[in-house]
Amino acid sequence: MTSPYAEVIGDPIAQSKSPAIHSFWLERLGLSGRYGRCHVTQGDLSRYLHERRSDAAWRGCNVTMPHKQEVMPLLDSVDSVAKRIGAVNTVVRTSDGALTGYNTDAPGFLEPLGGRRFETVTLIGAGGAARAVLAALADAGTAWVSIQNRSLDKAEALLSEFGLKGSAVPLGASVPQADLLVNTSALGMTGQPALPPLLNHVAADGVVYDIVTSPLHTVLLQDAAERGLTVVDGLAMLIGQADHAFARFFGMRPPRHEDAELRRRILGGSGV
Image 1 (cartoon, one colour):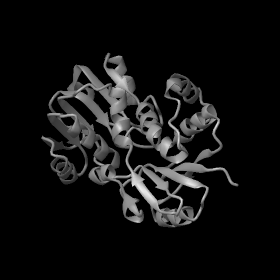
Image 2 (cartoon, one colour; image 1 turned 45 degrees about the vertical axis):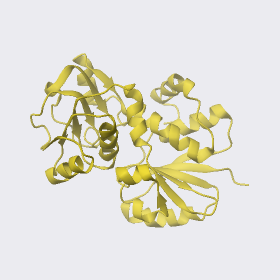
Image 3 (tube, helix red, strand yellow; image 1 turned 90 degrees about the vertical axis):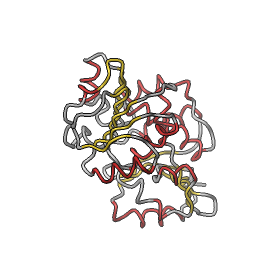
């Protein structure tokens, strides 16, 4: 019998660290299975799911940019959390070939923040990842969110949809001083344009959080660390959301007590 497998899909995808995370957990748990990556363009998304649906060894996939919203109408069902967020980052195949969508980004985002509540937040971007972050912030009782995005109408619609008070402003605009700055856009990612200066509007005891994972130490995080701000990198969120996806794919919770070793392996370049 072919061993079970899962993968991550996106465009681009070569930079994804998800295979390193899931492969580490499979190894540590001694499970038969594998986790890879698959480059899927927007035009190929429907064909990809159709082919995988008939593969009994395929347990599902994680979904990254730009497919988190486009994948939803192609699935048989979407769970309530993903429906509320309006984006799917995990697709699971059942034994009869049905495909169900989930979103593990919201708990993955909150995990490294350790339960801290933020009154004022600046958010960069308004895509699928931003939706998960906004849902998490709304549930946490955040008082004000400034969304910086090219499309102000899209940003304003998100604030209204998640019941958040705030403002929609162009990228780099002056905003209220933030306790938390989050970059959910592709800006600053390898091969993408850089972010404009943003740190002058972050409180001295604030947190700067960049979900980009390639590079892991983005210019934004480097500048924030030099200013003495607390920083959270994209790997922290990636590991947190992968925890929930791994359990759905392989039927066991991963060994989170080995997170430090997992990070060392990834940062050392092994398996990435």
